[in-house]
Length: 77
Image (cartoon, rainbow, N blue to C red; front, side, top):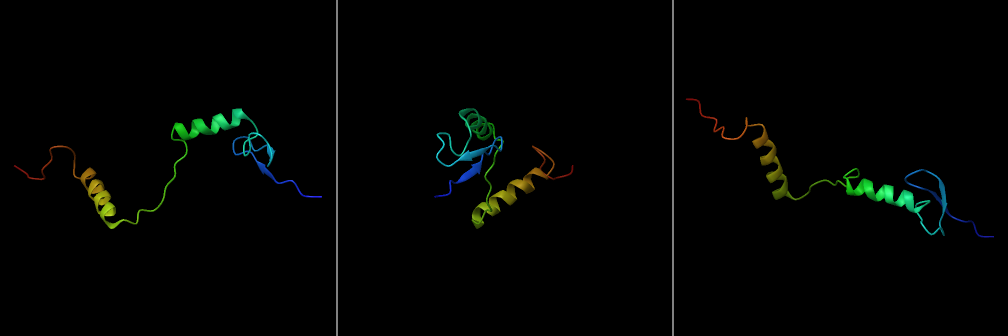
């Protein structure tokens, strides 16, 4: 007899069978809750930045934020 694969619903942690209509969720409700988290920015996919040009640009933006604000040229009168 073949073993039925199971997984826990990512939203409510209920056991779900692999052949379920709403797999990997236990219900349409849990599927919509998960979708809402993605839509509202509750989940974020991040990855390291490997592009040297983009890294330089991000460093420049970070340094600009520390300079003291808009219109601050750094010159003292």
